[in-house]
Image (cartoon, rainbow, N blue to C red; front, side, top):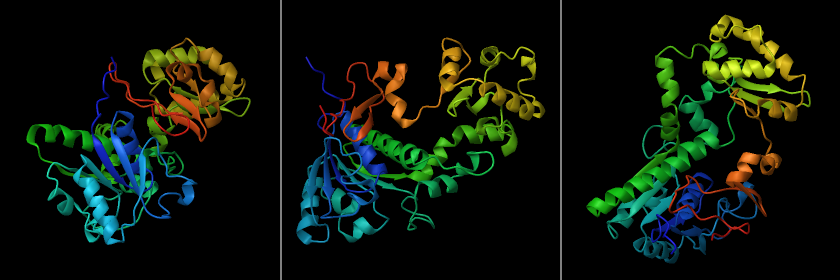
Amino acid sequence: MNTPLPLTGVRVVELASLAPAPLATLMLEDFGAEVTLVERPGGRDQAGWAGRDPLFLGGKRRLTLDLKSPEGRERVRDLAADADVFVEAFRPGVAERLGLGPNDLLSRTPGLIYLRVTGWGQHGPSAHRPGHDINYVAAAGALSQIGLDEPVAPPGFLGDFAGGSFLAVIGVLLALQARARTGRGQVVDAAMVDGVALLMSCVLELEGRGVLGPPRENPLRGAAPFYRSYRCADGRWFAVGAVEPPFYVAMLACLGIDDEDPAHQHDRARWPALTARVAEVFGTRTRAEWTRVFAGTEGCGTPVLDLDELGDDPHLSARGTYRRSDAGWQAAPAPRLSHTPGRRRNPSGGTR
């Protein structure tokens, strides 16, 4: 007997947009939600820079409607009236001008969860400004914490997806849980800048304790010899994260450094010289050789994999973390539930 997925029966209507909201709805679909994607006729939000199809399409039902026409807007209202979750990612006020704002839809369907995914949120001086991942990450203070010599923005991971998509999914699940008790829907304001700020919690707490120090001494930004990546003899990279003392001892043993007193691990004055020495050692062997050296130890060392190597990693392969599709690598649904795991998307883009 197949156990229904956790979100089986949850109906989602999504107005097409770029990456953060589509990943959020794809995550909902992975666990059973039925998603109807409303696309604009020939709209750039469907292809644009991303290519021939929308990002994160999965098994969503696709429907083309002209939101500038009264007929198209009325069709969307009808879809929302039969839905549990409505998703839009316009700038504040756009949905209201279309007659598709929260008041318009919740007055007809009081139990509707209205999800708004934006960079800056629904109010505040920057709410109407355009922006992208790098802007939200910078404004929330996270960009200043990445890189030693200059701020380096990760490609969309932090703002758009961790701060946006994941926050949006959490908001929907919380609102669905609240509706189960009260019968009332509500508006979920998922702002990427808020999500990044939440992700800064650990950094802020460590900063408050005086642990991190200035950038050139910050152990989590690459200043510490035991928490950074090193170039190997073949030009590839190997990462170490031996923070705790036993792991640091194991790292030194893997590197053959037997004259360094582990008691000095957190002596920041010694870090530059030790970093240079560790870099020199890593440069004597290839990444594959170092992978074998660290295997089975507690030295917390891992190869830095390129995208074309994801299928070669034994751990990722054993867990099925990635799967090859026509469009490249595809991540498995997560997290993994013991009784109702998410459904895997087919290589062709649908779900099963």
